[in-house]
Image 1 (spheres, rainbow, N blue to C red):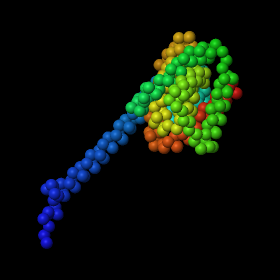
Image 2: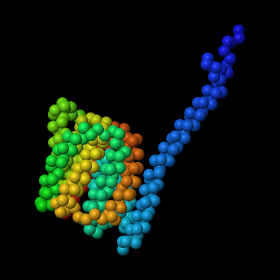
Image 3: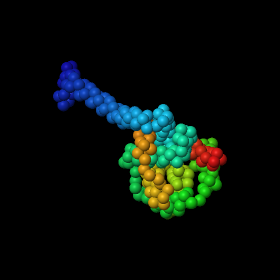
Image 4: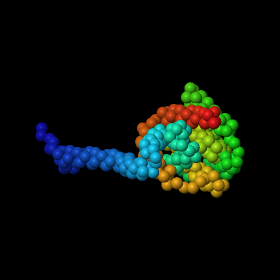
Length: 311
């Protein structure tokens, strides 16, 4: 019996060849879109790399030791790449290298501050569609309430004992959480809101004193059992705004110093490293992300203790 519908057509009268051609066109279109996206991702690193070369050339003529400027840029880029996988600990990672490469400790601090702000700006821009301002506000309110007194304390008093204590606690927490099953704290709306404010207030203190405003907020977000995007969408903008608040407050109190374009130039390799770190962040599972947080909390805590121990 002969078929009523030709094998080369569908019920709608479209030929199999036409369907096949349309499918191939869609596949090719998706392939072109993926290639365009890949080129777009490469555009930022390539552009930043060219800017780094220009910055290095300038540093070559400004510095009596021209290779030192390039070494600083390499250290900044590598530290930014590692820290941007989880969104914090840039100063803890970069500090050791910068204190060895830079003659004046004050200049090393300025480099870390401007690079850290640049990293946070770029990270928040990349994560912006996941940021919920209403969730960030309680943390920010607590931080802004304590950042002023903390800046005054840094400029007027010795905070070494406090710094060592916070560092030891962070390192101990990172070790404990790495060795046990994940701990999740469930809190009702009112208690959760209150603890958000308290945690933010702690960050207002640890920012100026320990250069780590996200210490408490990072720990608290991981304890809530939130996924990696939700965690970063809270503590990333918080860290950025608290760093800006601390810088503005210390400048107003007379401890900010003058703006130096050459120091701010190191933000270029910092953003390059941040871009690569965020690409790695996208590939992490929530479990891997939390392990990275614990590891960098240990690094940050130990760096604070060593900073006090070494004077």
